[in-house]
Structure formats: C-alpha cells, structure tokens
Image (cartoon, rainbow, N blue to C red; front, side, top):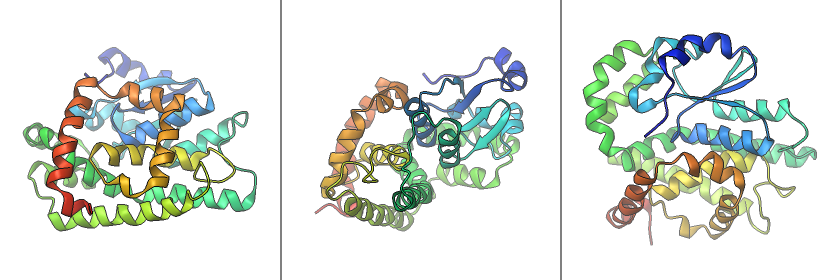
Length: 278
C-alpha cells in the first residue's frame, strides 16, 4: 500500500544521494506532504526515497545514519542533509529563485515567517490528534512491534510517544488541550485571511504551503472548520492547486481515505463537545 525502498536501493543510497535532490518521505506524513507540495510549487526535480513508517523503516540503521533523529522528511541536496519540514521548505526557496514563494516586502516577509512558525509550533498537536482520531486501527500493530522498535530507534521521545499510543495512554484532557490550541491558531488564521485570498496579501507563499497540510489533516479528523469561513474558502482555493493534488492527494491510498470519510461523520457526532461544535 505504501511505498518502500528495496534492499538494493538501501545499499546504494549513500552514494546516490551525493548527486541531485533526494527526498526521504512517507506518503501520509503531513510534514512530508508539506515538502512535496513545495518541491512541486518550486518546479525542482527530485528523486523519491520512500520510508515506510508502518514497517518502522525509520528505525533501521541505514536511515538513522542519514537522520539520527529517525524522522521524515529528510532532504539531500548533493549530499547536504536538511531535516525538519519548515527548514526544508525554506532551504528549497533559497535553492531556486525563479519561482519565488516569499514576498520581497519586509513587512510581508515578517508576516509570512510568523505564520510559518505558527504552523511549525502546532506539529505536536497535529501528531497527537492524528493518532487519537485517525490512527487507532494501527494501535495493535504498533504494540506488537514496539519492543523491536524501542531497541532499534535512537529517538527516545518518539519511542515514548509510540509506547503511549500503543498502550492507549493519551488522556482526554491533553487531547482537549490540543484541540483548544488548534482553535486558537485557527482564530488567528481566520483574522489573517480577512479580505485576502492567501495567508500573506502579496500572494501565495511558503506560509500557505506550511498550513495546507495542517488544515487538510484537521479536515480528515472532523475538526469543525465550518466555524472558520475564511479558512474554508482558502482551503478550497488551496485544493485547486496542482501541487495539492500531486504532492498530497495522489499519495493518499483510496481505501484509507474511504475509511476516513466514513469515520469522520461518527467522529464529529461522538466528539461534538470535545471539538467545540455549536
């Protein structure tokens, strides 16, 4: 269902990434989606290096040699390694100036950077809510493979998170706190998008790239976006971009998306109070 590198590709990878642009990514990772969208918007040629998180390939020795944190996405530009999705999209902007995704005006640039930092700052909330609302069917598999993953993976924080997920230890109060935090960020974005089409009034930018995947993920889990009409209108415009289709939608397995659409209704109904529906 999700792509993976062959053993032959793994053995050759360290030589091959010394030349050209390579992206280590997982199909459904929202941070990977962010970078793929940016690569397409920038028109940069790149080679796909899939890392299957469901098979715990991010715990393998070959990948942790590339990124000791054992996280995707990872960009290699002629052997220069860049991690963290917001750092990668900024790096891609610096690589190519023919298709700029940031404004020249200093005030607009400051606004863009602030919105990007806002997107980066909610990553822990997005991760928690994704696992709580969308990834529950994976819990048994994660629990079965947790011992091996814990022994192999060097990122203690990630191991701790997976252990809490496997043991169903996320509390309603911390989920509520994450939801309240997302509402706070959405209120800021709603105000930002008043009387303008994109996050920065100078046009589509890295700020939009940074938030497209977050809003999409919230939509999948049934978050009440109807309370934010400006965000909804912006989201519809975002979905019309080729990069959204090719960098995000094309990587989402059809059967999983059907399952999400079905469970979204029940999630919204069951969690009205939690989500803050009125």
